[in-house]
Image (tube, rainbow, N blue to C red; front, side, top):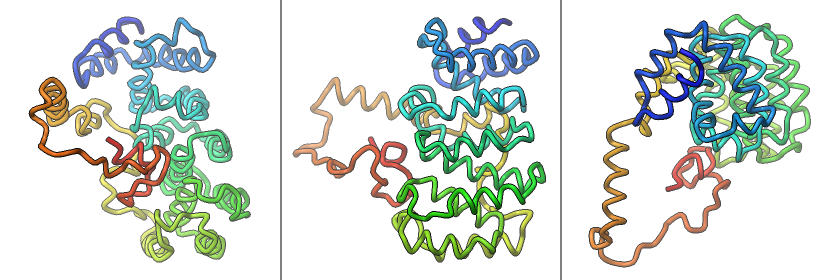
Length: 299
């Protein structure tokens, strides 16, 4: 199987291309370097590699490389995560918030600097930056990264609580400190909460204290009941099959929406009022999840 065949199989399948992903894994030795090359080509802006099929296939290549633990993909993937929000949205949609940290941990080659660089890049997506903070915690807890340089980075990079006030990267920063049980950084975190660098709509300081206490009590398992959210990315077909966007319920809902558009009489009587009409795409979601509206409850 060559990369063109793999892309064709993946992008022409209806719904989740489970069989195509399995076949790709069987040809891992051939496809892994080609998928890495595909990401590099996309980063280089080669137009021949930016057509619709390649953009769609990037989503699956990204996750397959994580599943395969391809360390050669670590730096290209880190560079990809520096891309602007619109470019990442085109490839990943909302998925990147759920999987970027897990894939990066899976392909990590031992050098944290590419992760540090994403976190410090003010132009990178703020939710990706937040997740990269948590990737550092995952690596330290797993014994794959020394804690000392991570503690120093978390202290020095965020020493000024006024820097980037309200940016979601602060959420990942406090989460990482809590998960590492880094009690020496608590005064800095408290200051950030008091200044509302960490938006109070995201989190209250008492919840940081609860998470910190849990990590101090059990440093090898600081995130119980996390439903796999802080584990390296696993089997792509199995993991993706649990997502609503690949479910039968999603297909039914999509069909219902198409039916309603074709026959407006099916809509409920009375004028429709959008409860979110005053909420911007990039505003915090009104549901209180801490995510942006566009990545949470936006229709």
